[in-house]
Length: 238
Image 1 (cartoon, rainbow, N blue to C red):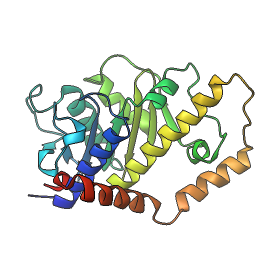
Image 2 (image 1 turned 180 degrees about the horizontal axis):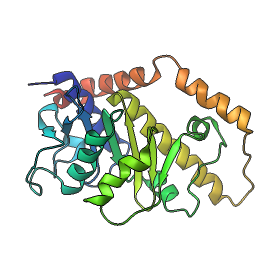
Image 3 (image 1 turned 90 degrees about the vertical axis):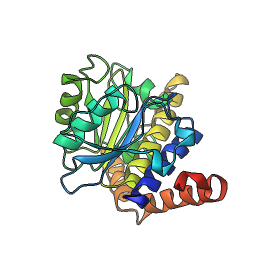
């Protein structure tokens, strides 16, 4: 099987996302480029539940090729991920969710998350916002996302969800996990109706840099997840 370890990383991240309840039915999608130009990529198949994903289940697709959608290939998934792998060089891995708290944040008129704890500070001034929702992510909608993303790695998709891109499965999973935690904290704090304790720009920026420089965190996070699955659901590796 080609790209075996890459497939195992992606399958593990899909399974663990389901364990955390961040997935949405059989919707949402993760992908990983496996060619130098980024256009050849692995992606979860349409209709396979994330909790049962195996390395061998992942499709290998090309962003420039026509594919028949609707059976194994989700139309929205191919449109969005194909456009990003075709147009955004730093999007080696792409993760898109409609997770509860990130989506709630995306539904606010002002979706900017203030720096109120170290998780929200991780994303301080580091999140692109797409406020042009115009349907399910097909055609022009998909092509627009890469332009709105720019050089960011995290994009809040207004009235839609969250999109994270990066160099590896480990980095993207760590980012999407902590963005959901940050959004949960913010939405929970808002629900109290009490005043927020917002950090200064200096403290927020310092904390964001410390997150970025923390040694080996994302790699260790994914390794720990794979160790759990190796013990409890080793068939993800197949």
